[in-house]
Image 1 (cartoon, rainbow, N blue to C red):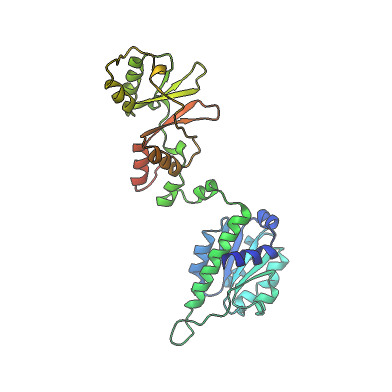
Image 2 (cartoon, helix red, strand yellow):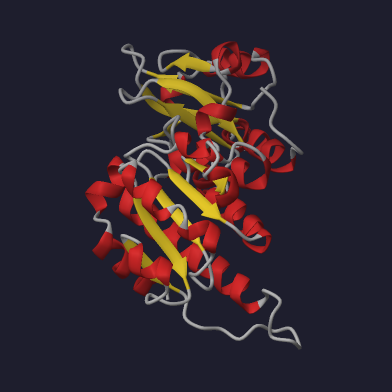
Length: 304
């Protein structure tokens, strides 16, 4: 159904035109469709809702020639909706109809039609909008997915629309939660192990790890308290050796723009607790600790 909807919609409004679209304006005349429109518009930003009765009394001024007006009407014969056809076209906007029949009055006059097909209402009288509203919601979701594809929706854009709740946390980036500045322990590859242990211990939050850099400040290694515990088991252990001789060379790393979800998967896959965060040049700009990832997952909300 979704693929069929996309093909039909793309045939009427090409991807280039949708890319230029300023906003989606959803219009309905029935109270039963209002909640459907609010749910649909949340998936189609930028967008706005307009009731047909209010549209003909001034609200049409909110429509621009770059807009696509989505008219919802099961019968396609709603008087309030049909009164908008000529004014909408006079404004230069495109009219997209979501209706049961392409041969309805609305379907014939629209620039593009998404046909739901005839559905029998579930109520005993066959009158109360039930099955038709469900079908309208499904087709609306299909339309939203189609637009996602045509506009090339990215994780970045979606994250901006959903900054809160579990969904927002899944779309957070490493730079939102990584430890920076004094909380990001960094040591030179020429430092003695003793010095690196001190850096790890004195760093606020005691992350239990340190990024090791060369003379140019580029990440060349990583050292953790787990590495230290393994060294303590060696008979030849000494704290005066250079960190370069005992560090973990070529460690796993992430970029600040990496999704926290992906970074968490990397931590789990390699059974590690910390990841150095590096910029495009390979310089450590932060540290991601598994505790920070867990705190994000358990947080009731994100407050800035």
